[in-house]
Length: 224
Figure (cartoon, rainbow, N blue to C red):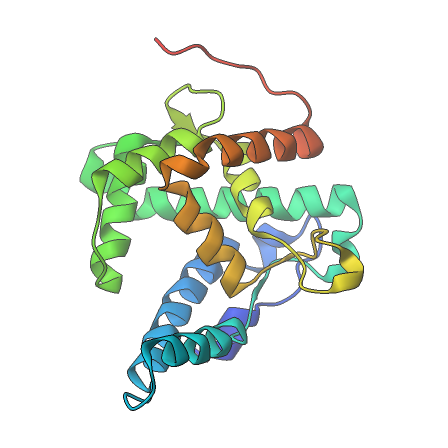
């Protein structure tokens, strides 16, 4: 496997050149896998002589210090057009990666969008690869939440909103503004909340705000 640190940190992406320089979707996938392995290692090294609460706090502190996934230089992230280009490229690469992995199993051809069959198949394969449970109910809820216009497909703009929601700077001076990176905490928080019904309305509202910020008002497609 390639060097974990270089995979997790990634290289700054120059606007308009992402596709030529790197596949951000593959880099993100590698970062997720490497991060999961690192977290498992941290938990396995926890001192059993300490209380559960002490072990949890120590593990969470170590996990929070693991490298973030960087898809854009923080200085470029201040430019809305550069940021929009980079996060959209990340979304497109991520969808393409998912299609390449599952479309053969699903009998589909890549079209730049994920329907529920493709989405759930990718989630199932990822869960199996990481050794974690796969839950149909939470997967369906996550899909419905990301699919903002309810047309039964997740497109690149909707996927970009997911990644923007995960992009929150840890620098107090940034006050939560996007900095072109996804921290361990932010990834875990958003991913976990997607499958929790009590957070659904809040996340949908947040995704709507992000969509309007990045792409303008979206067109709603009523459920059939």
